[in-house]
Image (cartoon, rainbow, N blue to C red; front, side):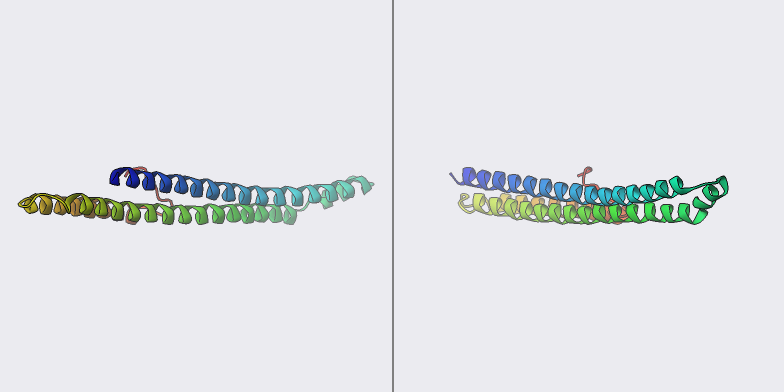
Length: 165
């Protein structure tokens, strides 16, 4: 009975985590889409204005004056601004994902420790050395995992992958 309740709780949390990841992905996609839509609207307005100016041109000299280096520089600056906005969206999403994964790891460790405690509290007398050894190995494994994770995080540069774990 105890194990079934734990498994149900773990399964429910896994579904909630998957739902949270999906919502975060949708929010990020919407943000990127909004940035793209705004950029396209601005570009279309600029193109419309340039075409309207081209229609008014009477001689070739006016056409060459219409296209200026400053306009190209402004377009490149706008492209850089758009890329920066998109990068911020991804950076924020990555940060939120890392927080969610860290929380899930902490909850998993707590559940594992509780499961071990609950499983060993009714152990027969005389099994304390085995229980102590098991708990020591469990804590050592958790510490080794945390050390490995810390080393991985310290060696990364902004884009963290938990795939190696």
